[in-house]
Image (cartoon, rainbow, N blue to C red; front, side):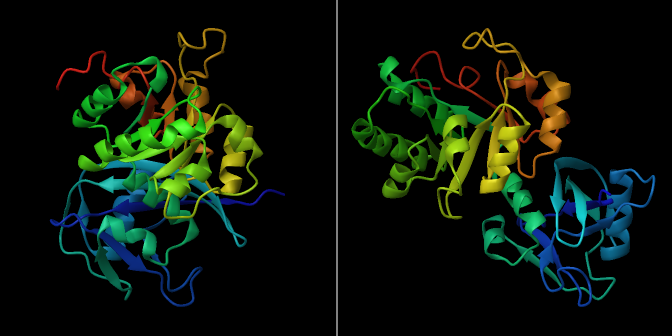
Amino acid sequence: MRDTVVHVVAGVLRDREGRILLTQRPAGKHLAGLWEFPGGKCEPGEAAPAALRRELREELGIETGAAQKLIALPWRYVEKSILLDVYNVLDFSGTPHGHEGQQLRWVASRELRDIAMPPADRPVISALQLPRHYAITPEPAEDADFLPKLQRMLECGAKLVQLRSKTLTRAALPPLLAQARRLATAVGARLLLNGHADLVAELGLDGVHLPAGELMRCRERPLAADRWVGASCHDGRELAHAAAIGVDFAVLGPVKHTSTHPSQTPLGWPRFAQLCTAAPFPVYALGGLHHEDLSAAIDAGAQGIAGISAFWPTTADAP
């Protein structure tokens, strides 16, 4: 007999300084003492946005305005299974206070990973800290203007970049990575390397992106929690393995036909949405996508869009 899934909603509220509100779970409840994003259970037949407004009114004494979907994810505890629907609350009125006697605290986003929170809230922290765009570089050896173009892409706003090279030797990567890291650091962007988790740890890069083959060979997370681990996935089996080893996020595709893989059947948005909402971590849509596909990706449950051609500049001219 399958467990009943409890539908839970939570809201991310920010003050004028950009700090995020957490509430402490009271004694006697599941996961008592841990800090969480405020919210609660949906009533039978109640839509998630309505449940969020009701819960925040009852729990914090505030009235919420517009809210934007951040992430929906399934999570299985020993005691129960939940579907957690999380929204960014864009505006609210009133001063939050603990109507049920719970403690409140406002924290900076960068502090969230150091706070004792329920396991299901950890992917939410990743979703809050990841941008909507995940830019992937082409093969460095095939572009004489690779570093100038990388700089241009970063100056145009890329905040999460995967350096992808399948032809450079491991020995040739460190000098290139040192220059790429310097460019990324200058604009506050994070640089991930496709594969070579050992090199990422050795050089102190921001993280690793695991190709699907390497992902399926991993038996555990290849880096510590202070580094990002992403993965490439194409189906439910790969997404499930990514969850088992504890990745922070994945890219899933191709969603549409691509010129680089013309024989590969695209998932399409309905199948992407089905797989994405079953994953317990943020998922980027990948494959034949452009900037104008971002809204469709978010509607399908994605963190955002990933790709090469959508972000890589055609020239190295200054932006």
